[in-house]
Image (cartoon, rainbow, N blue to C red):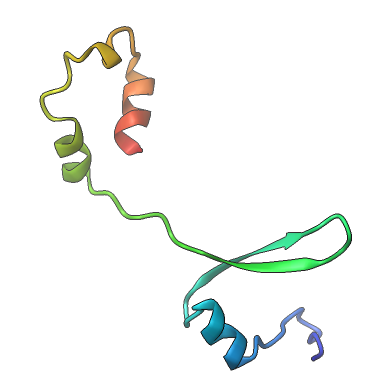
Length: 80
């Protein structure tokens, strides 16, 4: 298998199927110390709506876990 001048390579269908890769799948490349390159399937992070974020913390604003938490920290918590 050759790499094109644009750095592209076709992953064989059998390999894609075995790895569970589909069109629009996200992958990452990992280079090991010995030069081996791994291609890993990356699952996208779930999309959380603002409504879902608020439902997750509804009724807990007075919880001890939030005492002393600043606005930036609380917003980071809401965003997951």
